[in-house]
Amino acid sequence: MRFIQMFARTKKRMLVASLSLATGVTLIAGSLAMAIPAPPVNGQFARCLAQGKSCLKSGQLQKAVISLEQAVKEAPASCEAHYYLGEAYCKVKAFVKAKQQYRAAIRVGKGSVNAQKANQALMALPKSVIAPKSGPETRMLASVLGIGKHRGPGGAPKATVIDFYASWCHPCKQLDTVLEKMKAQYGDQISFMRVDVDDPENERLIDQYEVSPIPTLVFLNSEGEVVTFSVGYSGEPGVTAGIKKILSNQG
Image 1 (tube, one colour):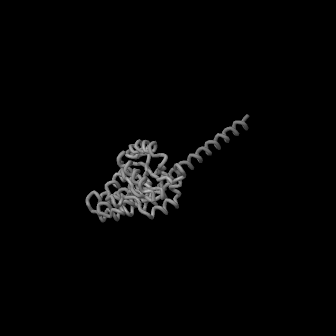
Image 2: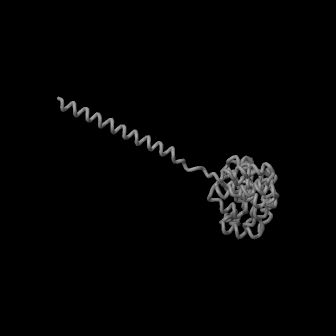
Image 3: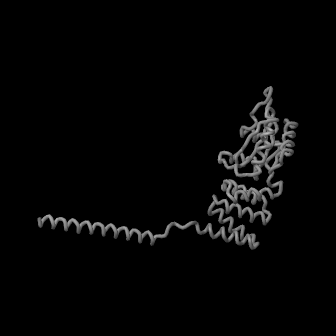
């Protein structure tokens, strides 16, 4: 009996010691975790972005450009950095660079507030800067991209209307109603093609046609040449005018 009591006391002491050891290890681990800081957010990016925005607000435009260029370099996927760098370039009238940054903001922003602001800012740039590619050289482009292969009655090649849009773009939704009406009226003569700018698979097409703000409509004749375009919501008259132009210009 005495032996059993001694064994129980020994077992209890071992259990207490084990628990103390485990608690000690936990406390030590916790202390070490507190002593070792978590990996910091990119402090350089945050500083450059904040400084760039501050300089932009105060009118120190060259300093703003330098800081925001560094912010974009530190975080290429930041929609905010691209947007504000576009703003800085716009202020110093470097409109082509501004367009590039606004386009990048739209691409990485996927409908965020800054992406929508970038799209609006693009609309305000000079028309010559945001115009998509057009002219005879676009015939080869359409051929390479496989556009314009649809055939109408009698096997004649169809003209094409490419609608560059995004689901978050309000003017794009307004344009949908117009385009549906045009499809019903001209569907046997024209192929209507929709291109979602948020789909990574469409990036090559967007870049090749140099599309900037959305919505953008590109009108190709039956030979695949871009003969006219429409940037922004042009309403039914604007779409009708583009369609009549490609139907009368069949290459």
